[in-house]
Image (tube, helix red, strand yellow):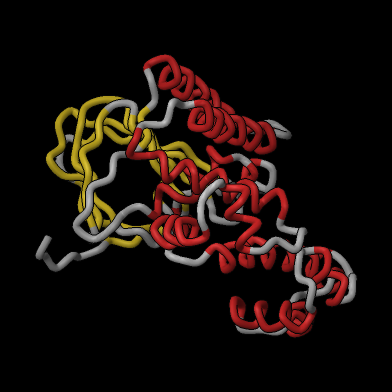
Length: 295
C-alpha cells in the first residue's frame, strides 16, 4: 500500500474512568476509521457487519465473530466499512498478572503470537468465535461494563476478575479449537512457548526443546524466527529475565541465586544477558528501583 499515513495517537490517560486502566468501548462505524495508534492494549471483538482491518504492513477482511489483539504502538485502521460494529476491551500494558495464563498454548497463540503475524504485504485471518462462544463473550463483556460503571467498594477488583475470566475463556477456546491448517504452526509454537513458561527454571538446551516439540532443531529455529522474529534460546532467556526482574524487585536474594532460580547455570552469563536486554546490570537495575520506604 503506497500511501503516506497520518497516524492519530491516543492516550489511555484520557480514557480511564476513575484512574482504573480498564474500560469497555463500543463503536458503530458507519464510515472508515482513520489510521491511529495508542499506548494501551486493545482486545477487539467484531459484533456485526464487516470491514477491512489495515496496518502499514498488511490487511485482512474482518466480520462478526472475529477477535484480535492490538498492541500498544501498532498503527491500524478500518476501511470498506459496512454496518460495522465492534467492542473494544482496552487496558494498560501493566494491568494483567498473566503468569498462569501464559503457560497455556492457547494464550501464547492468541495473545502473544497472533499479533506478530502482520507480515509486509501478507494476509492473515484472525481467530473467529463460533456463535455460542461469541454470545457468551458478549454477555461477559456486558457484565464487565456494568461492573465498571458501579461506584461501590470492590467494584474494580470484581471487574478485573471478570476481565481475567474473559481472557481465560478465549484462551481455552483457542486451546480446544480444532486448529485449521493455516494455524498449525502458530499453535505448535504456542505449545513450545507454554512449555518454556512452565520450565524456564530448568537448564534447557536447544536439543531438549526440539525433542519436546518433536521437531528437528532446524525446524524449531525456523518456527521461532517466523513466529517471533527471534531464536528459541533468546525467547527462553526473555522469559527467564522477566522472572528475574520480578525477583530483583521483590526479594533481596543475591544475584547469583536469582540467576540459578531462573535457569541460568552461569551468573556471569546471566548478567550479560540481563544487560543485553535491559541496558543495565542486575545490580544496577535493583539499585535504580525505589525502595519500599521511598515509595
